[in-house]
Length: 147
Image 1: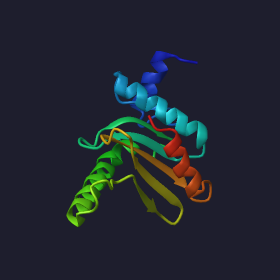
Image 2: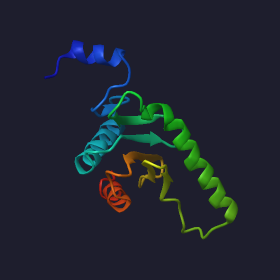
Image 3: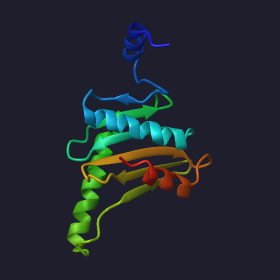
Image 4: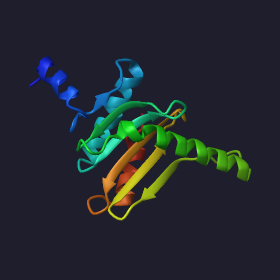
């Protein structure tokens, strides 16, 4: 049930959990919200997800399952990682047709995937438990759900 007062009250208590939260009201935010909802439909066991502006490091929309895992806090770090990897590829003087598509960070119990969206201005960030999700499935879901 949608009760505006309770929604505002939940927002005051910290990170909103188990709900896709857009960072604004524009068409960019609506598209990001729809993208995260599609990802969530295909990967319901994910820990967190976000669509992030690469240049600013600001989240466009976020989702998390726990208050301890705030994708908005790490959005800037993920954007900086993508920017640094782009600089590294430029320094390598790779083929001009080659471009960064995704970055995988593996931890003992989690996988964190960053996938550049087709506009090359945003990235899709997804965090999953290694025991719950196969890497191939997570990658395919991210590819198939792109804006």
